[in-house]
Length: 237
Image 1 (cartoon, rainbow, N blue to C red):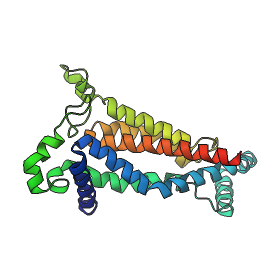
Image 2 (spheres, rainbow, N blue to C red):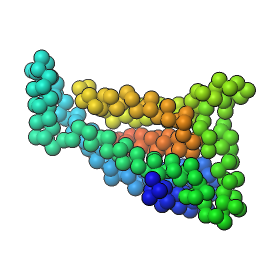
Image 3 (tube, rainbow, N blue to C red):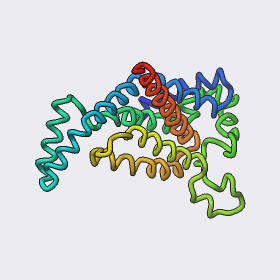
Image 4 (spheres, helix red, strand yellow):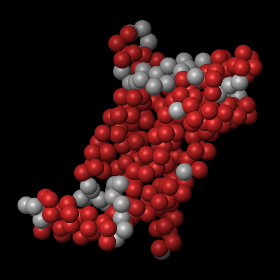
């Protein structure tokens, strides 16, 4: 991940040089990444629309071959091929984000190496990463409920507000993408179910800064999807 952590950390450090606040730097960094990935978001929405359009045909196949799962799978894939649809292409932006997430994880884990230069680290680097943000004492440690309910070690094992928010936003975003696909494929259904729980679990293990990136990224994509769909509806009218 050093290959990705280097440039991602430099970008984050450059933003911090202008903003002067570590959490806000991560938020601006996230927005920049989402704008760069915007063409993929458009492709994702196009794929979702195409999947919705073939749902009646898929339902017909499921009724016809309900007792022959092997034939059903073959006919479904033939239908996708006929309409030039990749049923997993809707997950492409999510998959593209994973290397970015891993690279950012490495950068945030060693900000003295990837985000701040040696001189900057001595001047303000350590102070920057340990600065409080909202209810969190810093963005280095994972966010747990102990940040709100202090004085009880039990709450240190429970996900905090930020991981919960990130998981909820992930669930809403994935449900929005699969809306209208009542007969969604098994892979998509599994992804819709498992991904929010994965985000919730990893949110208790990863730094608050990384979870902040994911929450803002997901929220930004939700806004993007809503605006794009609204504009398309107005064009149709």
